[in-house]
Length: 152
Image: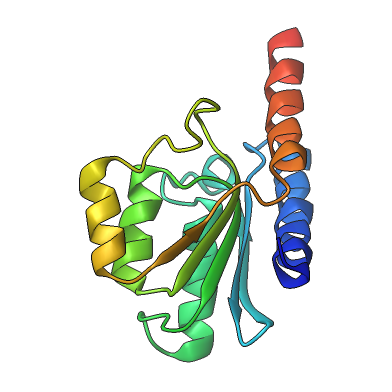
C-alpha cells in the first residue's frame, strides 16, 4: 500500500461515515486525477430516492462535470467497498485507469462481483484493480452499521 492509496482511502472512509450519519449504507468514494480529488460521493440512495445514487456514481458525475467528459481517462477511483455490478458497469464505461477498494463482500476470495466475464472486460479495458486498502477499517464501518441496524 502506498501513501497516496492510504490517504485517498481515508478520504473515502470519511465520506462513508457521513453516509452512516444520514442512515445510508456507509460507502464512500473519491475520484482522483493527478493526486487531486475531482469527484467524491457517499451512498445517498435513500435520501435522494434514487437507486443509482451509489458513492461511485456520484463521484463519477462530479468528476465528469469537472472534466466536461463522461470519459474519466487517467483517473483512479477509491471506494470503501467493492463496487456492485451496476457500478462496475459505470467503471468500465467511464474508462478509468485504476480501481482501488477496501472491503469486499466475500471474505474468502476478496472478490464478489468480479466473475470471469467481468474480469475479462476489466482487463481488456486496462483497468488496474487494487484491493484490500485499509480493508479492516472499511469492513468495520459496514459491520458496525449493520449490527446497529439489527439492534433497532
